[in-house]
Length: 416
Image (cartoon, rainbow, N blue to C red; front, side, top):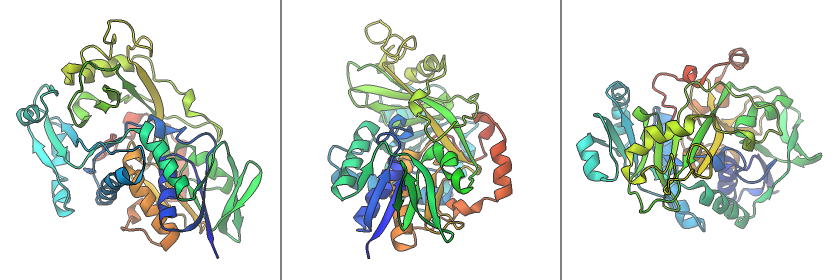
């Protein structure tokens, strides 16, 4: 008898899960999405990928992602992983904390190179660094363009027989004898052997119908894109921690940058029908991104502030040609929430990927598909289990309100 899986959410995590389930010939796979493919954070992501994370499980999962991104370049029409490497920068104060993780990387067989400013200048003449930063270079890192990856992955799903229902909002879950048995979407029952919820910041609102809580916090994040530059800028993806953000090449001979806002208050999604397109970048952060990050790439000139012609950019007073805001989602301990829910057999979740959901998505799809189709994932991801949280502590945690800066945990970078 053919099995059926319903995946709630058509962002990169949901689509990746559908794609990898279909590759396993699982049976019938349906994705339901309240808007259009990638309407949420996926289309607003920076898409930077590095495997140099802070935990064993995170590193192992990212190793899967780095392999799959390269393979997907051959599997998906219209997509290519940009394997330019990822340069993670640290100042003297922050480097010792990351340096303590190098034995973990060595033990897990992760490639990296430690570089000083002179070595980085020689490797990337287009990059101008100040002070004495330490560079931790991930040669397998890089980035993906959401504008290319999302439609290619959705088309790849459809080619494998996945049904993607857009404009279809889930109002309830079907629970039969304590087991998850499907969803109610647009007033219609969709029965299934497995239900996978990958709805990012909507998770609390979607799961409240079955009384399920997870300890999650969300914060607004913003990114900006310059006007086209006179010449390509040859730099890796850069997590520029001492400068408060990140910067990478962007298709169309542009640069993409993101800036942190430690003062950002916690954002609470008002309801299931919330649209992320209603969020705008807070005033002043565009100027901060230009002042902090564009000097790292002198070839960008003043593109981030006035545009290449000296006239304001189309995005308004910031001068950036494109600006977007989205939401990041974090669990109470900073690790993703990925796997089966013990309380409701047949229900799986994949959420809270901090600022690295795009980087995690191939691995998340592989691991969730392993749970659903085979009963076990490719690697041990018990540390990501949704069952690791105490319900009373979760309830108390979700009642608190904090800023992005107050969320930070020792050993946990907020970026990628």
